[in-house]
Length: 271
Ligand SMILES: [Cu+2]
Image 1 (spheres, rainbow, N blue to C red):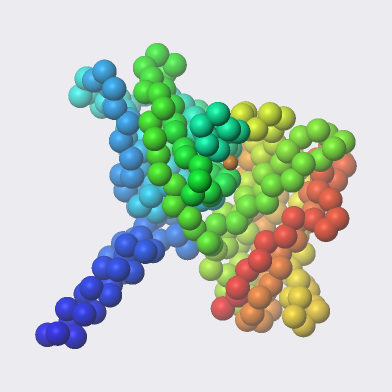
Image 2: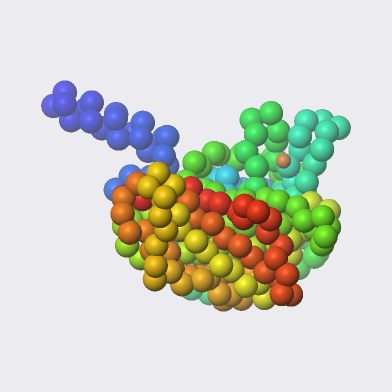
């Protein structure tokens, strides 16, 4: 009996730390495919926005698949669109910036949510986040404080390019838990000129290169990611053995490389 109690406490603590267990299908292994759970409520003047996530039970650093429920004086809405604008404040009077986020969250009848994504690009305990919500540009709830949680498996790469005078954000959605063999690679690519508005880049060419640094080799049978629309790209990476791999991605937009040397690099522990 004592063992069971200890084990239960152990599981509860793990659940608190990692936000998932065998009962929770909201696994972060693929941040796009869990069940949606409610993670935040913003309310004012009888209008309510609920945020639901299929990535985790909190807002996480990196890629978040999210959806909204909108209630106007208690009545749930199922048409129109939601806009979500998070801002990161680096202290009062300090720097602030926004993040790449779905431009318009549209109603998805299958999930009964206005669905899309948000990519939290920084995690800093000295900073705080607030978000504005709007529905059909009419109804608004402003400056709702949101809490962001760290997630070591979330990876993104931010760089600027002095020629295009843009800052780019490359987000690795999958894999988070890479396996030996062929892995689907899902990424998003955004650009911004002002750190306030980010746009999805649709027509990039990507060239991935898995590299096992410790042994000095790459791999064959990789498939470069190509665009699926909405700033998302999918390809295949072949990790031929267990251990740490780098995944490089060189990117061309309008026939010119926007990435530098070395190109953006993600680090994956392959099992
Ligand atoms: Cu920041």
